[in-house]
Length: 175
Image (cartoon, rainbow, N blue to C red; front, side, top):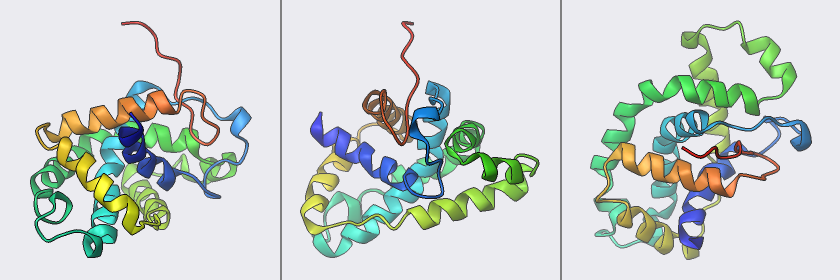
């Protein structure tokens, strides 16, 4: 569980910081749909940043350097469908003043801004000691397709963020 949480934490890291709301007590929770959309939309960028940061610390035959291409292609294809959930999550995680200035923007105007915020958050510090474990986690997910991988990471992140202070997921309702 610790290893899966570590992979999910990479996404959480990109969502923390001054661009997001600073009052964790008042922060609304993210629904499963919003968490799924957020993960599916941002995961390609997260994996690109982690793969790039780890490339110098992994062998040329490692999964992050050599085998992640098909997963990345599948995730990229799912970004469009994930946008509505990611958009809703972004607004829930954003500062009230930022929301006022962005809520009236069309998706065509908003998406580049959201992507820019993501790019600023993508300066994830990747150290050599976490690269091998991250590679192992990514490789363990390899038998899953992109949608399954994204859903698994969203479910783990939701469970880990149930009582989070920077990003909180809504309580799970029995199906």
